[in-house]
Image (cartoon, rainbow, N blue to C red; front, side, top):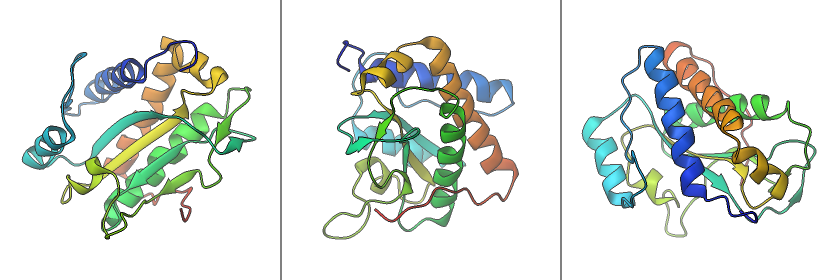
Amino acid sequence: GPAGTREKDVNLAVALETKRRLEAEGAAVVLTRTGDYRITLESRAAIATALHPLLFISIHHNAEPDGTRDGPGAETYFQIASPESKRAAGLVYEEVERAFAAYDIAWVGDSDAGAKYRPRSGGGDYYGILHRSAGVPAVLSEAAFISNPPEEALLADPAFQAVEAAAITRAVIRYATTTDPGSGFVEP
C-alpha cells in the first residue's frame, strides 16, 4: 500500500485469525502458509487437492481499482465449472460486504465488483489457484483495496483484520451448515 502496508502480511494475519475463529467453532483448518515465506501456487493447490477440504479460500487484498464507489468494492472469484465454488464466493462476498459497509470511508473498486468468475483466453479459470485446485470448491477473496489509502489504513489495523476474518468465518459456517445461495453475482 502507499503507506508501506504489505499485502502478504495482511493476508497472513487475516488467514491466521480466520483459522483461530473457525477452530473455535470446531472446524479443522489447514493453512497453506503459516509464516512469512514463499510457497508456489502449485504447492498451495497440491495441498488443497490432497486434503480435499470442504472449501479452499485464498485470501488477498486488491490494487488498481477502476474508480470510487459508494461502499466496499470487494471481489470474490469462483471456479467457472463449480456450482459449490460459486455459492461459496457469493457467501464470502455477502459477509465481507456487510461487515465492511459499517465503515464510512472513501471506498474504491472495479465497476464489476462482486462475486464473479474470470476466464482464461483458452478457457477455464484465469487464476492459477482456482484452476489448479479443480475438484475442490475454491474461492479467491479480494476483500479490499490495499492501494487505496483509506482502505490500507483499515487493513493495517488488527481490529479491522479481525472484522474481515469474522466475515470469512461466518461465510464458511453458512457454507457448511446451510443451503444459502450467496449473492452479489455479476458478469465480469
